[in-house]
Length: 281
Image 1 (cartoon, rainbow, N blue to C red):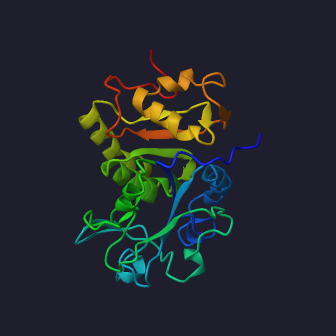
Image 2: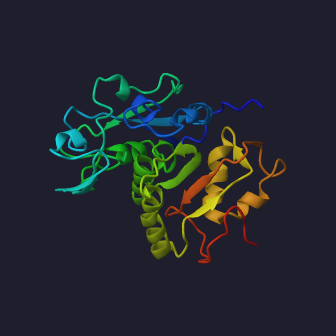
Image 3: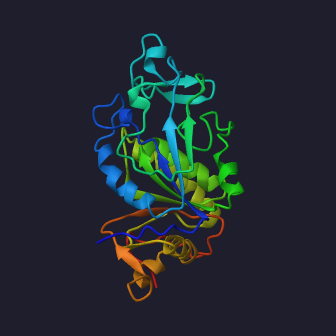
């Protein structure tokens, strides 16, 4: 079924994280099946008027590379002045093919390519803050200046750069959604579960509701994507059971999943957790 190419509400942005060759099969820091996301991300991107792409862009000898530390191996963890650091194989080195965005990433209308990890002395998973947790990339200000208040996140890797970016977007005040089927994880030594723990603790303490999973039968097309996302954020998962061809002009995309990080505009007060994929009366 053809998808609508009408732009989404301009208050909504798609944030595409690190779709680069070094994170694809055969790359220096490959994420399994990372390349299979490209068709879906391209289709989603066509629905958004506002698209931001991030690009890991490390200088040679970056502090996060195992090769920069004597007698250290990739995937070991060390303590650096800004905190714990997983050491990685050399990857996404500035000017290398591995640092290039994948040629099949077809988002010609993207307004910004944000390069991160450029400081040789600090790693940067998040699109919003570097790993010292104080140095801003400027993305939050860029989005707010353009009236954007809702962010959908896709890309690589779910348990590192995607998760950190989503958490920081949420902390910066954006309504934030991670499209699970638009991401792939490394899931190294429990990293996927660990990445989401801060989300659960933060949401539970601040809003008395855990971050919940939802599998809508429909993802809105065109200008309706933000309207339905806002209703989802405001009314909880109830909208999932109410949405149909009769209620909303949506087109089916089977098994697409949204992880909702409830933003400051959420009106849902019921503290009881929702069961996965079901709405509560």
